[in-house]
Image (cartoon, rainbow, N blue to C red; front, side):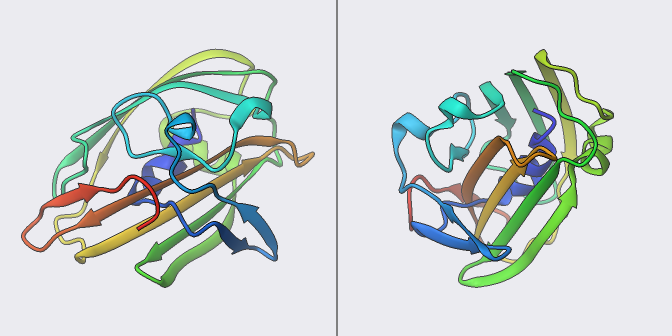
Length: 180
């Protein structure tokens, strides 16, 4: 769930095409499939069947959904980690604006979770996370796609999430389901 900080920044989206190159490796991203949707009021989808993921997301709610420029986005998430996540875990983040990649980076997960008042090791078990994120007032209109792919230091899959959000002129936004 702590990975939702990434998902929150990732809230800007993705259901990237069926195959996306990420840091020299290929990540499979399924076309929109209701079975892969993350439960709750959100645009998130798992990249593929999460049955072997360390993080079992039970619910993620965003308010407002879709996110609105200049407003506070509240993210509430619940889930269960099947094992501890320790120092050395990584998150691969890719954000596209239309067809243009604007962010493609690997970050230390333990540094990232500090943004939601957590620290490593993240203990296995149930957890709930609530975080407010102030969105900038000026977000360039367009469709944003995001992939957040999270691994332990031993390269075990924690989770992989995608989403798509389109910001409209005048401050409106639309959540997209599926590949657009």
